[in-house]
Amino acid sequence: MNRIQQIFRDHADAYLASARPTDGERKVIRAIGLCRSGEYGHHLYHCAHCNKKHTSASSCGNRHCPVCQHEKNAAWVVKQQLRRLPCTYFMATFTLPEQLRPLALAHPKPVYDALMDAAAESLRALEADPRFVGCKVAGCTGILHTWGRQLQYHPHVHFIVPGGGLSADRERWVAAQGDFLVHVRALSRMFRGKMRERLERQGLLERVPASAWSMEWNVHCKAVGNGERVLRYLGAYVFRVAISDARITAYNPGDGDSRKATVTFKYQKVGSSRWRHMTINVIEFIRRYLQHVLPRGFRKVRHYGFLAPNFGVSIQRIRELICMLYETLRGWAMRVPVRKPSRPLTCKECGHRLRWMCYIPRQRPHPMQI
Image (spheres, one colour):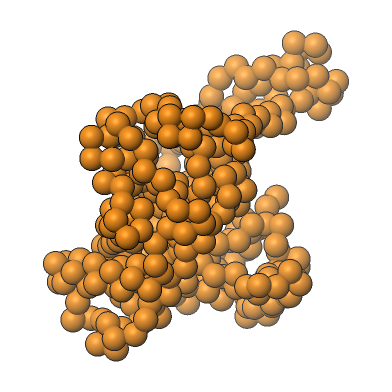
């Protein structure tokens, strides 16, 4: 069993007794605790070799569950790799200042929407400036993260940005100059201004300390080559919440006493490759984990500009425009990603591959039997 799931099963009741979780957090607690327990039904499999039948408990499917989201990561990375363009890529990171984080915890959906959209608009506006790129239609993909390496609340958004964009008539590729995209200071100040405008429209501006608007906001932008490595890196976090099971090095259940139970996990400081370890109480671990539950229906991955799904020019056409600009693809090779097949279920008796037969819903008692 996944250790994160075991922690929730052992101590969720103690956490619920000591905290006031939202309805969304209660739903996540229930989903993680009951995932693959039979509460969500079973799948029936058949082995054609020995004619045995096997059942497997169904997953909960909740996007915050650490048990059943792994294969979605791999599928997303392959899809994005196939959409890569033959150009230099950049990664831009926009971090929400500490003064705005209490507001984000209280009103996550409007603040996260403002964070992602304000950052994307700032990027596209500066790329349109002739002093930088000078393209009229830029494109980028944003991925929201809300956690730091120690599970603390640290909302920020990473953008994967192709180095260039389309002209006004969408018939010409305008490339960025070398490893430079836009000035970071100008990007930071424009982002700050657009965030303020959005929060004011939503009636949330008065809840932000005035000091937040006079300080420099943390924004980074750097070239990342052809984008292949950064897609793999960020793809690992698209369908994952806060921490993976592999980073948990020890779990002490405390003989069922949540006050004595502890969780130890490893982490790396920014700029360091050395692993460090942190031990915290199990209730604090659950609290930190649940801080990163997203609002219902919220899209944490968004595509903007010419990368948007409804944009009128296809990715293949944009590739052709880039080739026309450089007249060759020399120096850029498209390596078609190969998705590793998932490990098939095998028969416990003979080891042969199982064939899925049907889904069996959970058998609930008839009202007259209760």
